[in-house]
Length: 201
Image 1 (cartoon, rainbow, N blue to C red):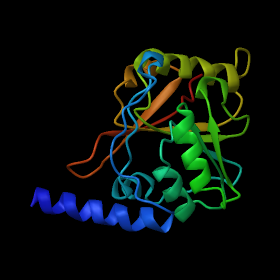
Image 2: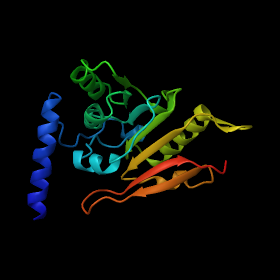
Image 3: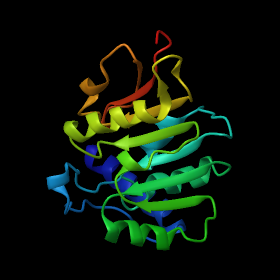
Image 4: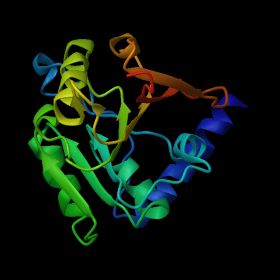
């Protein structure tokens, strides 16, 4: 049964991938492990459907896929959140270039090559992360969020949410400034947590 379910998911992923140009399956070893980057992998469309089920965001939100890789999450957003500006940030220039070329006809999609620490948006944002880097870099990302969105006198300046799939560095956010909601996913998927700004700050 488990093998049959896996095959079904691969076929479903293939079908949606091909509508956006090519199959995106498989894992690619990162060339940037020394920078803390994880290997390039892909979220499953069914997992994304569970994660985003019933979720509505203000049109002012920009959606940011942190470590977008080949761009499957961007495909999903194009299907379900096409009114939003969609940004994929990818450290590997080769992968970033390939993803940008594949999605170049979609005017609301921007692929940026570089380090997300230096590329945070200035608008309200939804960040999606599929375990993109190690905990040291995650702490740098957290500090960058404070630099961009937080003021010592008045607190958080702009709203944002983080959807953290396979959250191996969740401890980084365990302080009074953040709140957590775990999304219940079916057996066979990774854990997923929504991180939001704490109202106590």
